[in-house]
Image 1 (tube, rainbow, N blue to C red):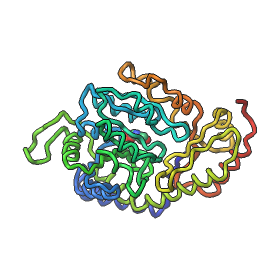
Image 2 (cartoon, rainbow, N blue to C red):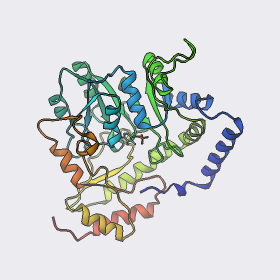
Image 3 (spheres, protein in one colour):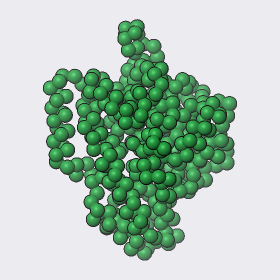
Image 4 (tube, protein in one colour):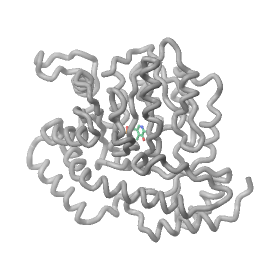
Length: 370
Ligand SMILES: *Cc1c(COP(=O)(O)O)cnc(C)c1O
């Protein structure tokens, strides 16, 4: 699914040079390299402010807290996403309200989101699942109409764009993860909140650093913050890797197109084509099959690794306890997706021959009873 050791030698050399520079600088946390990467990434997203944090989950929690979400508020999340999306809402003290997803894309379904609205609903965490952005104009209008804050979970959508605007730039704030497997990954954990709103940026900076005010009142702690800071080493690595991101996304796009064009099997549904090329950065290539288990076993025997994103809709995770609300009409599409989906290898270091091997193996599959 991912083989980081395949990163080309000259790229590894560049990262080793970054490591040496940071080591010899004697400055390791929240210094100028973080500021520089914050400015670069915010700029890439087309917004003014970037706030480097410890990971993607904290980025969501900090975005919610900086937006004024308080305990007891309700926040809508989709049923198919990384558990971190829902957990960040729980950690903020708000109540996650889980809505169903669209068939095919498994993106949040607007009808279901409308059904779960209540007088306590304050925000939506919209997930650009698998790297895909869709209906952004409609979501912005929906949130404006209902007085909701829009937070984008863009952890899988680095540099996806729709109508010329990047993921993370549509909402009041966007949250990114730089976990190693993401399209832009660190050599460890990292994350960022991006926003065009200066006061959200200032509050997010406080939340990531013990709630400390940045200078105006000296070392005053204004909110009961987290310790969630980006370090200089990861900022240096990310600054270097950012120069390769476009090329890596192009490679993912080529792989996705090869799968899309090449795989034809009556027991496999491919994801819908994106509305336009740039709106999808193919963090994951996810297909659905009623014979998932047999098909994955068959692929495994041919040396093709697959994975499931995600085996359970988030509301089924034991950690939710009784602290969530779900769509009263049920989460039927999410359940169906979770029980049939699996991810084919799709990362920038796959060779064209390997992609062809996957296509042929998929097409040659004969086993499996529905
Ligand atoms: C990876 C991911 C997160 C969490 O990011 P971490 O850096 O692992 O905390 C949140 N949401 C989505 C959709 C993700 O894919």
